[in-house]
Length: 233
Length: 99
Image (tube, rainbow over all chains, first blue to last red; front, side):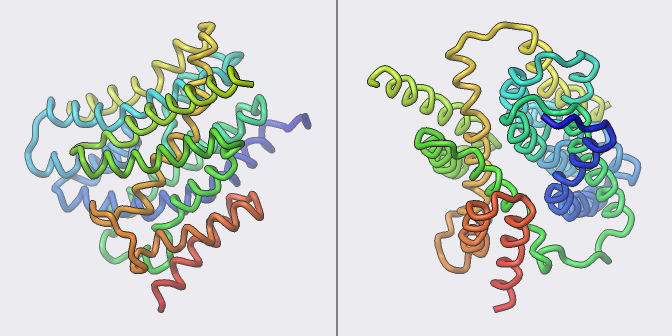
């Protein structure tokens, strides 16, 4: 493995995060606009991005705050929407054994759907430079915080991101990272089953259970099928 | 107050598994299950992005995200590059919307 300096590794992480920045920019702006419309102050709007940093739950919470909901409903909804982090954090843990606990505590704050996907692609290839991981995290976080500030400040005078195709930046990134993860027939089965289950659960169940439940079930299917395959061969 | 509560529960979902599980020797079955989580999460995120519009299934050619997924998949398989896949996908969406 080529030894990178901290600065080189951080720069490589920022470059890897460019698709995330494309995706977070317009979504962060949209969040800023919506939160102000719901009645949050500019300080509250940006503080939520700084301290919570979880896109879908921020949209939901801004709407609930605007509608006058209280502490318990908002906090419990936030917990429910963000339960999927438990899975992602657990899936990263076998790869991050040798690292300091203070690093892990900082690193964990920046786990999102998108950074998780990049991290697991990097860690699949072996141990990654901690500064590479931090570069991915801080570029994504900075974009989110800055764009929600811009949305909160300038709101509706910004151009429509859909015209630039920016609404497809994150789905396209998921496609690229999914293709890397399709290492064999069992992985293809798991990815396809997760996608189908997630759609069905989203159609049937209210709330945001689809990603958590579909991931748990599809990974379970992968475990069963791979165990049967290794038994029969 | 509400914001502090939101920040706390969100951080706990992110930090608890990482801080506890890195210290433990996990059973091989659990490790193998966890090794399928990345591909499962990606599939679970992508399915609704491509197939649902406004909470409803949309298999029509009016679904630009579903159509743009095809050039994105081809670009991803051919180039194995994040950036080129995103460029192909966003370009396809812009093109479809201009038709």
